[in-house]
Length: 409
Image (cartoon, rainbow, N blue to C red):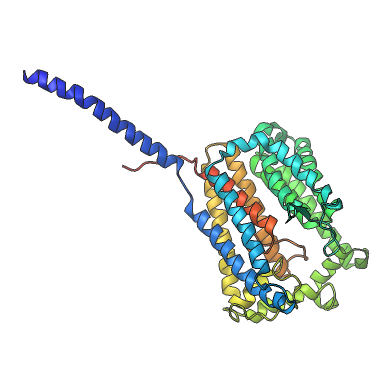
């Protein structure tokens, strides 16, 4: 009798036990899929909001003096940030990053096709002597920023599908010439945007370097590039090449000696250095910059880091650099733990794009390298750059959320 009752209890208890195990398995699966690197999310949102504050602080005076809405630049950047956050959330939480590989070629071709459109009626016309913007649906769009993101996606797709190309020097040169050379040439010759061309080449070079097992190819190419730049600097410095023949050569002379033409080519970098130096350790206080009052042209763009140091001090400037370093470190963790090569290389591509622009921007405003127009990610004014960087962070989040999480009982 007791045995029969016990057997009945066992039979009745078995389905309940199975249901509990299934619920636990479902909970574990749900937890794995909802993994989130909150460090990346926090730093990105903080830097973006900090950029809004600095843009308003820098532009409200000049806009007021010209009779415009003092919040105009702030509102423009806020709209771009809202759109970028939407893209980041959608890509990070809805899109499986592995689906991006299927549309990498159309995205790359579409991005390249936008470059010649700057010369059509869709173009915004020349700004500071260059045609680099489009008007699409009433919005100003800079194709070069979209090209940078498309180059990451397309290069990673090639690495994932045709990695054998990286085994030979000819194969590496072929990939560099097509994936980096074509967009870089279009950006340079059509939009006169050498800085973006350099970033594109740097992204592709770094991705190929990380994906390859043979490093001598890249040592040879990198050494050749450094040697060519060094030779160019020597020729300009020795007056073998006339610096007046091109404004880029003039920037090299201004880098070597900003005081030689303090009211001309060297003016902007000197004002940037004055701005950083006058801020001291803790700055003059938010909104109290002198250099933003017409001394540094377009201070809210490429030279925003110098105003940060002037108003909030070198301490804050170093803290911002440190936050970018933490962000890149968190991306390295995501890349090293990604479930596949494609996801890992996507994160490496975003990391290289971010790192290159931060290093070049800070190096320019401190006169470590010659002046070139590179915005500071998430902080500088620029709608296309803002929403493209946030979209790239969405890709990183999508990769991170699919990393298995070890359960702890």
